[in-house]
Length: 324
Image (cartoon, one colour):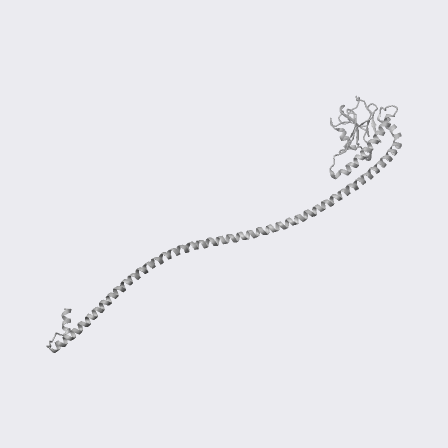
């Protein structure tokens, strides 16, 4: 289950099967092909792409490499010389480092952490088995032959323990999940109440906003009416000023007419006085003429008594003479 390899710090006669390099080498734990790692031409990764052999051994660092992208494994060192414990071959026994997760992935991360703890325990037990081996192995084949002998019993026992602990972890996970769901339901209920309150407040604010908009429209209409009234008032004021000017002119004209009327009245009074004087004079003249006529009549009567007939020239002759 856990393939390991034993190497020395100094490598003799090892070359990359692609570029014949003797530095920065690694060996595939599946087919024992030697290739250079990422510090050189990275033919080890090219070998993984062609064959999909995941695990390799780095001769320089004495570590097991997992060539598959997106996975990360802990390094575990056995206590026998340069032996290195490889990554687990099955996915359910892989030792993942705990990844950073968001709040939405929190249950998966916790379950993953529990699985990692279980696998670490099993790994410690296997390391104990490694300590109990009588002597270190010098090649991969020897260690693999010994490992195959212990594989069946160890795998069954580990599988049962892992399944039990996995079921326990799943039960705890479901229990914690139900508790979290209950807490989330309570929070959801609280949030729904808050949403209802917010919707009521929103409706109230919308109603207030509608009222404010109506008031603004009314104020706008009133403003338009006020502007119309101001315009009319300006016209009326202009007409009033014009009427005041006309009134002042008419008043001045009336004063002049009154003055002329008064002058005419005074003149008429003077004329009336003159007429009265003339009438008195006419009366006096009439009296004088009447008295004279009476005197003349009396004189003519006296003359007729003592008169003599005198022939005067005709009027036609006098007219012709005057015309000449």
